[in-house]
Image (cartoon, rainbow, N blue to C red; front, side, top):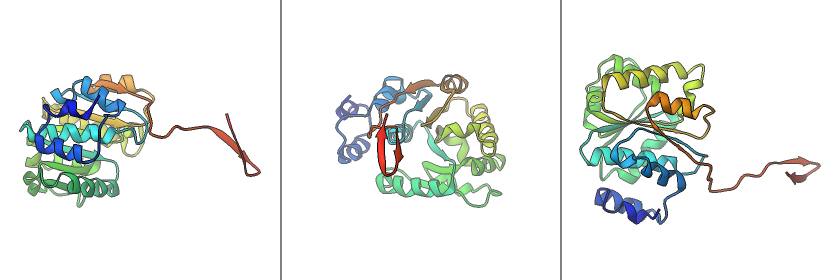
Length: 221
């Protein structure tokens, strides 16, 4: 699928940003996500290798939600460092189109100032706190992106992430959920639980080869 296919379907300024990145052809998981209803606000679970283009799927979902006035977006990541990294990356790329914030600080505050942002990047632990403090921003959310969603199986972070997703689905009946992961063993069960279309793809930008190194000699299978 050519990027030009999206020209009439996305905000013109947003499309210009994508075009300026030098994109010509969409990657397989991106094309499959669009065919699965990404632009018509379907819930989607994307399972594809690292560096296969999952983040752009999330960006399209968030910007489409915000720029069409459907609602604000929240991007959930597992680590504070990753939240800061995404904040810097998205601000550089989309800061002229939308207001982007990050919330990773004190977990015992409502942070009502978040209402001035269109996209907020946070961790599941911080979002759990925001929910418990009835942060006004939450009522305006439409698009919820969960990066590294396979961490639902993590003994430490999993329970909090599961509770956060469950509460958001209960509080906000019409949200769009976008799950991203490179490693899910039970992707069909997870997509069913999320009520999401499953996008599975194995394409990666660099092919992987398995082998053994012994005495500085590598033998590939």
